[in-house]
Amino acid sequence: MQTASLWKRVLILLVCGWGIVAGLPNLFYSRVEQHNDALAAIEAAGGTATPELEAARAEWPDFLPSALMNLGLDLRGGAHLLAEVKVEDVYKTRIDAMWPEVRDALRDLREQVGNVRRAPSPDGVLRATIENPEGMAAALDAVRGLGGSVVTLTGVGESTIDVTAEGNDIVVQLSEAEKRATDERTLQQSLEIIRRRVDQAGTREPTIQRQGEDRILIQVPGIGSAQELKDLIGTTAKLTFNAVVSRTTDAGANAGPRNLLLPSMDEEGVYYIVEETPVVSGEDLVDAQPSFDQNGQPAVSFRFDTTGARKFGDYTAANIGAPFAIVLDNEVISAPVIQSHIPGGSGIITGSFTVEDSTNLAILLRAGALPAEMNFLEERTIGPELGQDSIDAGKIAAIGAGVAVAVYMVASYGLFGIFANIALVINMALIFAALSAVGGTLTLPGIAGIVLTIGMAVDANVLVFERIREELRQNKNAARAIELGYERALSAIIDANITTFITAVVLFTVGAGPVRGFAITLGIGIITSVFTAVLVTRVLVELWYGWRRPATVVV
Image 1 (tube, rainbow, N blue to C red):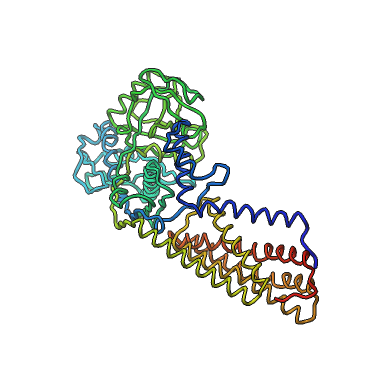
Image 2 (cartoon, rainbow, N blue to C red):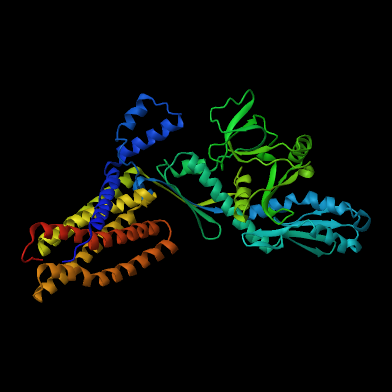
């Protein structure tokens, strides 16, 4: 029998050892979780530990791995919300904010258009009535000049506004292209705000994802109730524009009186000392959008209301060449340098941005409040006792399936069945280790995927062992029968698992929530089961055969 080389055996055994050690913490989930929480609290306190934190930290040895797979909502309990974002609210806000600009643009054409007044109109539509219809062409050109170009990840497109004439009225509304872009930005902004607020609450592995065109699914394990989650999402983030005193890498630097020491969001280890009193607050920010500078490079444009424009204009005029900090939730997200006086309450932030960077920064700038009202279509609270019931039921199913399979393998294949059972235990350890390593989430359907993996893992061993039996019936010697059994069963094992793996990929790609949980564990289980069935059992058989040197084998 041609045996694997020493380095291959060592590598296979090392992978098995890693799986057992890395998967071990999941058997002591609550103790390891307390240990991890204590470590995080001690680190946040600058290394200072209370007796309670030290006791929690001692629940698990520091020298052992402590990464855990995350438990999904159906296993831990928590809150589930399905929210609809009313994107039409953004249309109304954007169009209403344009009236001062339209009025000022038409005021310069007073001799041609006469008096201008705003006429009643539905939400999302602006109607401006001019006195002299003879000046309509000039008025339309002036108002169209207020529009920009729709900015998407693929570049610049058509105008952001549609301007038409109806009698003496100039009708202004967002173009269809801008509405689509606005919907996309609004959903992204809502997702970003919700994710930041939920993360700040210290919850573990929330699921926050878009569903359809205007809905957001929010699942937060470990939170008390759906109402508590709604209250958390409804809080207001704090956005300010502060004068920068200095920049430092010293986390313990003395900021001085009436100053703040704030970390940079994007620059690791960098801190800014800023004045405590902001120049302008986020309440004065009307809009921020991705755009392009005069050189065609991605940038971010922003605009304040009248009060904010006056304060910002006075500050920029007096501080040309000085940086100012854009602060969100006590983190500096950007610190651009003032290049010139910025009147009118609008400006542009330039830098080494990609289009995606400028889009994300614009989202953060607007993240002081949710961009539109959210209508909660579905809300559920799953108690921790129900989650524990799911865990207990999953344990019973997995253990029951494992015991039944183990008994069958030993009864059918004797010693080789024991080898298959050892590989099956290692397979389970590798699955848990992989989920822990990648931060995967185990759900109730995920447990079903593990149970399915148990059957698939031994199925590969059955193919190998039956092939060995066939070779023995053809009077092959034991060593040659074992070698041919593994070689000739390999193609069937690979084919069967590849097709199942493709199914898992499709489920993960098009599925959501529990379906993805099933697909993740199934996909990982396929990889680990092929590894254990083809490589681990072969190493075990080779070690046993090299030690005993039997003249015949019974499979």
